[in-house]
Image (cartoon, rainbow, N blue to C red; front, side, top):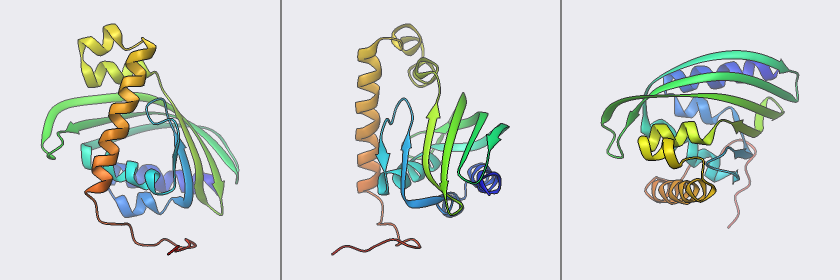
Length: 171
């Protein structure tokens, strides 16, 4: 059931349990949000690992909107303490209100679309310049490029993921 998968997902996120978080996703999952508009398979797993490495304490308030075995929607506010690239706490707490739409296959997330105000994200990441300029299309495009490059660097520095259930190994 989708509700139990989402409960496992949010619990794993709050506990910082990367393996449990990854186990909620299908090996061919896709993910999209305003900053990462189209990630697939290994890059989804890379993003999850990247985010866990960059956040400290996590709090989540969830409002379950609708769901069945195939789809679910939830509105949630996630708060986290940011970490630097070196893993040190920055002391800055960030918060986003997110509308997530999940699609499931065999109790695993195969598609996740997160919607949030990009300017709110940019304001928290870049301070005053994000607040003033975050609404400009060029600023969002630049942030997407910066985020993609940071994710690429992170993935390159990580050991390969172990094959997951149902994954095909191509040689």
